[in-house]
Length: 351
Image 1: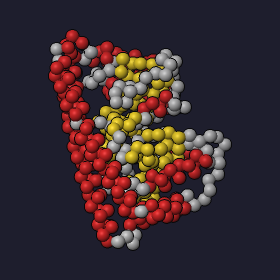
Image 2 (image 1 turned 180 degrees about the vertical axis):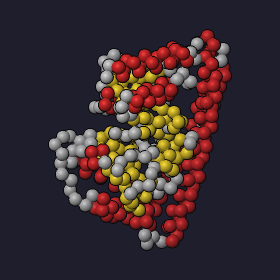
Image 3 (image 1 turned 60 degrees about the vertical axis):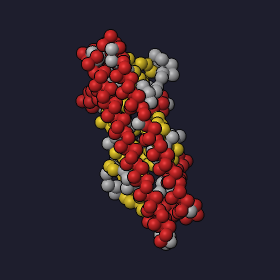
Image 4 (image 1 turned 60 degrees about the horizontal axis):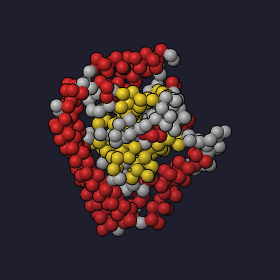
């Protein structure tokens, strides 16, 4: 299992969501989809439910919000086959067959709507200010993606191919034995571009390889590692790359308590790995001085653009916080508490 992760990410292509994968997760038999606007208590409900589950002795996976990592967008209790998720925009989730293992929890009914109508102009203005911040965010990230492609061009495909081949032989020197079942893939994000900065969460495995990869060339290497374990019929968890969401940033093999994750100097977090592979040094070895200087200049521009994207996300969060302040006085929190207690009683006493 994964203790904490993101299921959505701010990327050069805009917001990318993996929340619908909860509906294909074979561990989940019951999915509750929370609906309701800002400030109505969705995150608080999930935090309370997760804490209660742990008090009962069950392991909990928490899904963090990429627009506010201190807030929850989902909670999974795999031993109970249970998941709760925020199903509102931008990570909209709807039941496949409502009432057949998937259903809504509507916290929007806890609003006192008569009070909110008078605040509609202020709420609308704050919402528009919040949404306007995301244009610069995604513009900066698109520029970062273009520069990363330029850096890979300076390194050259042949050099990348040779270094990747040598790295794979070092990481997986022997052919893997096949297990007696079909392997599965599960996609999450361990890294996020957030108002709190560029974060990488701890994948929480005993043996973790840190692959130092400033240029983003390690995605192909990790795809090969992924395929080796899938061919061996092992389950894998893929950490997708927020700067290139079709590329892999991490591969975790839960059954072996083993993983590989690309680390970049701009991202903070992720504990010190016991094992280390330096792709950067291998790729830059014997490059001409002017090429190395060009790579460093591009990396400097990328870092500046990433800082700007984080700054705009902070502005967006500030506006979202103002919107929640407008909503909260019109929320019946006693009703939210009752809904939370009823859910906990229903979900945990029957188990």
